Length: 400
Picture 1 (spheres, rainbow, N blue to C red):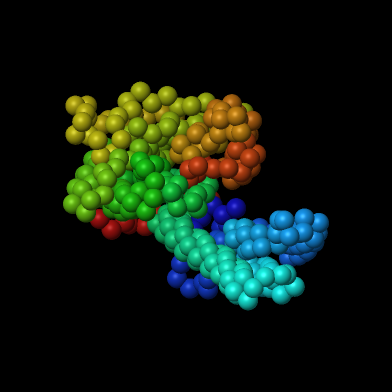
Picture 2 (cartoon, helix red, strand yellow; picture 1 turned 30 degrees about the horizontal axis):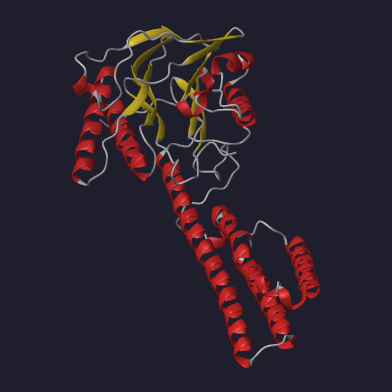
């Protein structure tokens, strides 16, 4: 599965994702799935033939006391829920033919015949119309979901990224259900003050959460280069989220906060961190994995006005061959069929000897197995390691 927005670039993921700008409707997997039927043509024809034979047999055995064939008019309505439009039309035409044949051979007045046929045609037509409406609605929702996911992918930087200090691999799996689309964010920026990294999660779901995430990402890209201190970067992020919330309030949207972990790498073997209500990183080294203890966790971005404490940075060591794993709560809050949460600390120890990309591959596969493929939130994870000297990019002056 893809781990980045640009699936066609060398060294990046293999999954081709819709960008909402040039793909035909039938090229979008979500749209194709929305208009696809749940029943194949063979089983549908066999089931329809069996049902027709059974109903005609019952009608013949009950005689004039109970006419069962007219009840077949409910079949197109049932087909409209599970079948494609073409399949539903086939079913409607077949049922109409059966009911007309039955009415033609049955006793009754001319008006009995007219009303019986008219009712059958109307019921079948309504079934076809219901199927068309269902597919149209599902297609529109699939396009909206694809557009939201494409927007998320375009906002976030393709990974892996190598800077003068850090080799960053990433795992990013946006959820494609409209009511669950989240606002997970990450970014890696090389600056004159070192490499700055952010991973975060916007409160809430939907397009509005993506907007708040974009505001935070845009502010980070500017502040990471401009601000000499990591706390200065975080203050700029706080101001950006507050401004975004003020604008959202004016337009009737709910205000949102952003949990974030901001890291700074300067090549000294230590990592500076400011934790704004986010999950602590995990350090994998010497075959062991453990959560990094951050004692100065502060409130999420956008909520500084509710706290009297100022945000402060702290540092911890990062050995040259160690990997730092940072994740969003889509990882730790994944659930299995019993409702139990994903035991990240227990599982990640198994992969302590893996490289960054192998670690993320193992995490992705294990998450899928644990949750049986059912997700309720975006998943984002970064595996960070000090960049080897021969992999480091040449330092370029950054615009301030």
